[in-house]
Length: 135
Image (cartoon, rainbow, N blue to C red; front, side, top):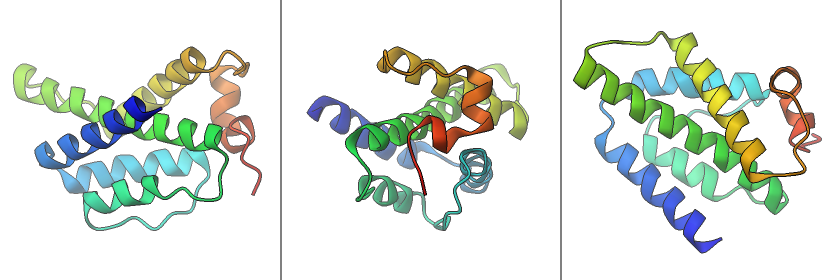
């Protein structure tokens, strides 16, 4: 658990340090939270996102891990997109990046939880229910 948390914090801080497109990231994050069915306050500073996910109090550990995994998928896809833009001079659209995040999140959820039995389409049709979040 400690290694996951440390890697999570380190990757997020690395992302914050090297990210140059705050507005673009905000649009991606808004798209992902909309897919999840969350109504969230979107902070103006990227470092506030770290605080937001470090304080997911009230949720069971399994839900916190799933939400952190989705957040890390955002970081991973955004980092890869940045590299593609820098080294290959290609850009994906906002919707393509959101779709990549959804697919990456699904793959990581399946790999990390043997009890996760939902299909990709069912997950994104009703994500909160599939993640065990009942608001």
